[in-house]
Length: 229
Image (cartoon, rainbow, N blue to C red; front, side):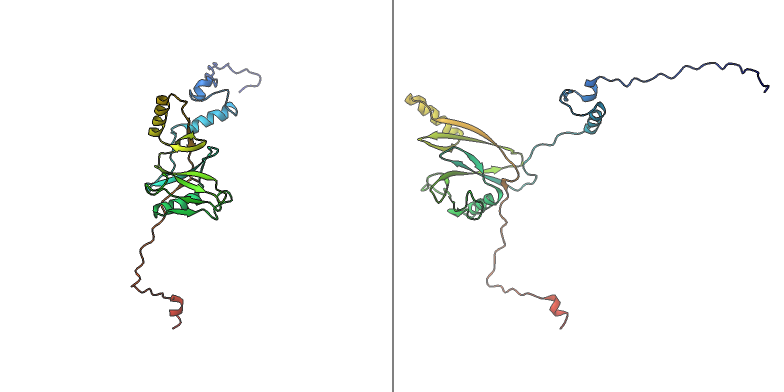
């Protein structure tokens, strides 16, 4: 190659097309996302959408086995306040209920219910309502709610009549309204409330121990002692 001699010009090739990175925000976030309410940059939101691909929401359930479960709640007959019993108290109530006891003390289960006694309505001779009574005479109406796996919310109807609140069912509600209309008087105050269930209020049936045969002797063997004799 001689010095100073210019090389022939090479034919220019067209540059590859540049792919645009601009995308419509609706295409990135999807129809179910609100662009204004999202937190993070565009790249963060794009990554969130990629992680959500193929996901589906699980069916809401309180528990995931076939054992029948229950929750216990109490209605303050004076104030109308409804509360769930926590697991320890609910387990004691469930055990007493299944064993057919007429009453059960709630001693040692918390300051609010310590000293209270729950009396079950087991027959026609009872008042028809299970009641919790404190040492000072304050009463709360108690109700047991069966909880299937798919139940996550409880519907409770309460009525205030003669200055006291009590729990009623749909039939009793209709009867009260019809009676008030028939008598031409103002119907009693009736409220329908919905309570959210959590695992802390749902209890399983108590474990039944095997029966004891008193005529059969039981022997204990200490294996460590046998090794020395």
